[in-house]
Image 1 (cartoon, rainbow, N blue to C red):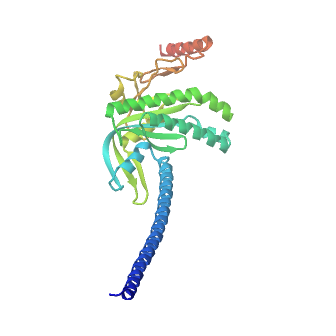
Image 2 (cartoon, rainbow, N blue to C red):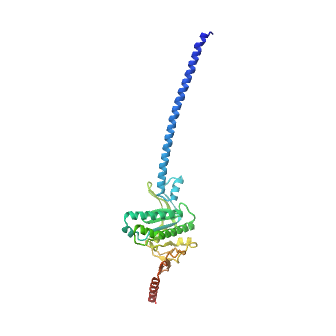
Image 3 (cartoon, rainbow, N blue to C red):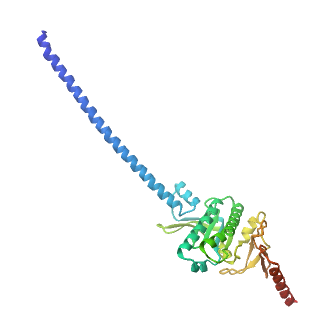
Length: 318
């Protein structure tokens, strides 16, 4: 083959190579554009996922403020469907309220009342969570709490933790009552009542398919509420069952019988005694006597008046 004949063949081969190179370049360019497009889509998807995560985190945080930590943990850890369901468990139920709160609402402006109540409930909740309690609900100034579900340390320890919590709450109120009174300009001694009862209750989700309330029902709940109403200001009154579960580790008075509203039979209940401070009232009670002496700042004149009163009643009996 002559030189003139080989040139066209080489040119043709060269054109083919150039065509391949152009095709490859076009493919690379298209692939690069597609990769850039996919990268942008991926970045946008990542941003949307991060934003969704932030929204869910915010919703989760808000939800955690509406339910107790134990219930919140149960909702997010449990893979089962949340539905209407309940079970029988031995629980210790707690009720508290502020003495004379109705009168206090009449004395305070709504802003002062709101500020005080939020401060009070926030600190009560902090104490409750520290002791591992399940906060059921707030009803105005009243607080309903229980121990034993969804987590339990056994009936006796649940009851002890509840009484320990109640003591901490009473201590906090006594220590901070003067500050609250000064800040909100109300002229009264702020005290709270507490009632505690232990026994078998029905606990779980109650309500409708669209609106559930995780709470506890039963006679034990009613008894705790009635004991709270019967308790002296600044005291803790517990049921006979709670007393039996904690009598070895908590100090009580000798107990007395109570006629509680809504209950047909008399109920024996015990008042928690605090032995390590003179700030708490000293109480003596029998079936027919309920005597309370506040030794802090007790004057000799007041003591003599009390003695004279008892002597006069005693002479009448003779």
